[in-house]
Length: 133
Image (cartoon, rainbow, N blue to C red; front, side):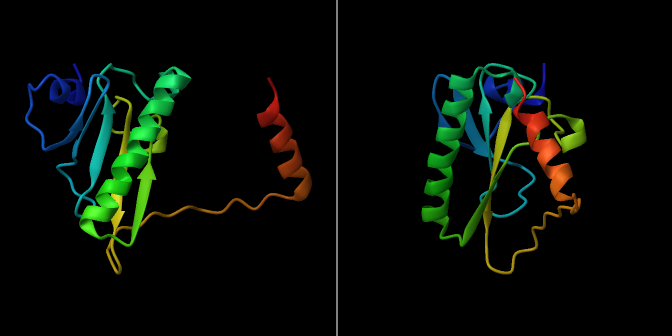
């Protein structure tokens, strides 16, 4: 049983900020910034790509609602909402979840994306590959 399943079953304590029949949200014990929260499914899925679209929609709708609440109540200047699917994408707990990371002026949280420069024809080919059924 994964750590998030144990948290859902109250086998491991957490700092809950929201709970319903389908989802649980709690503070991440490794606060990237003050107020960093996780929204997890109560049903175990390895990642959001395993979820039915309707359930994933409810997960992200709840995430947006909670992010707005955190932004308002903690008076933050911005917000990162992110999800990692698979180890190569940085997922460390193989249970569907979304991070809500409040951002503050001059905080030390950083994300870095490298740029892959593709030509117009490469971008067109890539778009066509993605659109395939």
